[in-house]
Length: 48
Image (cartoon, rainbow, N blue to C red):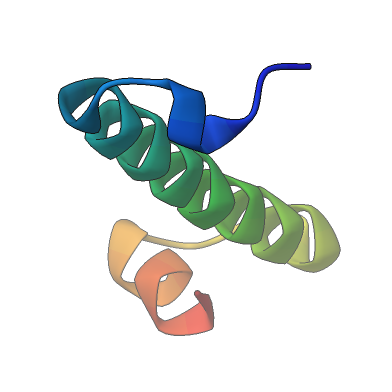
């Protein structure tokens, strides 16, 4: 495992942004899985 600070500044920004995106996707997936199905996109967004 490589320490985060050993990367260049630009690479650290990419890693941090990717982690944030993955975190949001995990929350959306968890909410959708708990609910099952949605009538529309608007109701799915309210749940998240």
